[in-house]
Length: 277
Image 1 (cartoon, rainbow, N blue to C red):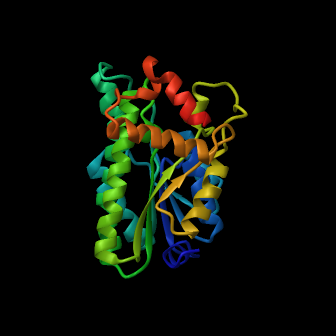
Image 2 (cartoon, rainbow, N blue to C red):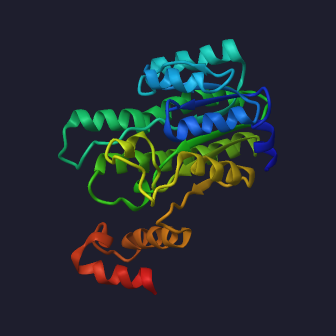
């Protein structure tokens, strides 16, 4: 484990996880608790959040809407006052839906409010104290491959996750400039994962999907290596396939191809050859 990760993920230190009522957030909270940390679970009020905190001995639930900037500021003050300095902040809360560029503006507001501004609110509420402190600390933001390769169908979600990628890259640079390697930022990029978001569309876990526990196990492994980009495969997509898809998307701009050429009829065969050869 890297020096910063080893010191931050340690017994009796505090971890705050948003979107912790289920899925990757709950799996992460359990992993941090398993390392002896004192865990604060953050999500909107629900029976699922009550069940989640009851499943982790010694954990605390603080119901909060991450899209509410003032509520997140209050959350940060409450955590420090009652639990002490935060060593790990995992901005994981996310919602789906949204739609294309002409979709309901209210749906766009909801997706950007949680997925992008929820992360920004978490960073601005918690990270200044991490910078001003003396202890090692980690910030983990949950992105998505859709924020990198931009598959058509849900532009609002893609925009939100592309924003998280840019925000986390910039944050990592700022933290490096201000703290060296004492406080670091990391971008978790799950693959196809069986969470509440996918369960709302599918009746049972597809064989292709990873479990949240698999994602978190890889996250912990890569944090130990100090990785910034934690790109997760799944049971249908290999790391090699991910790398080629990301490279193809980047070449759209470099080669001045049509936007999202991977899904363009005139480029379909070329993309297939690229992936094959």
